[in-house]
Amino acid sequence: MTVFFTDRDLGKRFPDILAAAGLQVERHADHFAPDCPDETWLQEIGQRGWVAVTHDGRIRYKPNELAAVIEHQVTLLVMIGHVPYSQLAHSFVATRKRILDFLALHHPPLIAKVYRPSATKVLEHPDAPGRIELWYPRS
Image 1 (cartoon, rainbow, N blue to C red):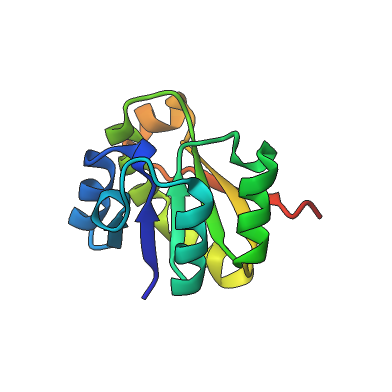
Image 2: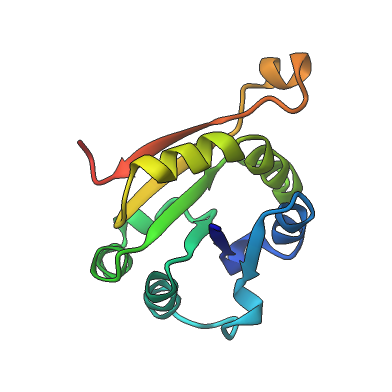
């Protein structure tokens, strides 16, 4: 079963919503100090084979963090969107089949963006899935 590790930047509600939907979730706060450097937890997550979920879209541009993703064979999903984290979490849950299918086809190290569905799609279907796109490595 896939274990999703939620970065501290997603708060407490995001992992709670994923867990309530039946996903296996580990929270940053349950394993690391709040000021733990990203390279440290990325190493640990890679060693455990967990899938890291963050909202930090700049991680790909931080050389030390990108190096940690590569060196420690991390699968990192970046949530895209400037909405409350509870909405991002519900979108993640609605997109989980696409996420799991994507993870079955791609192997670490990788960074992928997880997008919410458009507002129009959400109005038509509140549980509409979003999409997932490979961000690193670029093909």
